[in-house]
Image 1 (tube, rainbow, N blue to C red):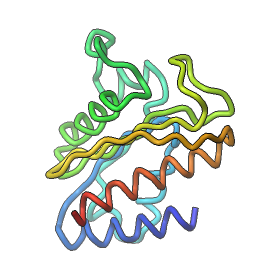
Image 2: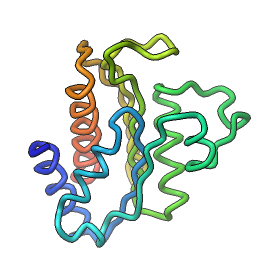
Image 3: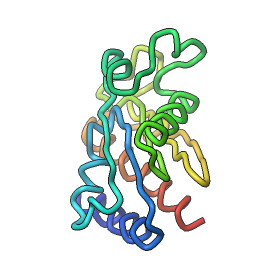
Length: 160
């Protein structure tokens, strides 16, 4: 967790300096992204909210994305990660949206992705989506890697 908070401190300093805000949607990271950002003192200056969108029901209730709205999308994919980041940004009217979706392990998901598969997205003045494959089935290790990757991608976009 110390590594995550270290990255989050850099994100926080940049967001505060720019007077910008963020909202987070995560799935297989299980709340580690939000927890890292909230562990930094002064988080209320930049963190508007977050959601752990782990199930279909959570997607419908928390993200307001219906089953019909998922036509053409598959969970644990880059287009879905981008949709989540954009949805969070719009719902919270934040400068940035950050999302993560994947398969932490120890097994893959029902879509055929192996354990260690994650897609992360940043939506904002600069947008980027990427896929991570850790090749590992260690659930907690993957969760930490997914969160670190998402925070590093956000930091890259903030500084880019």
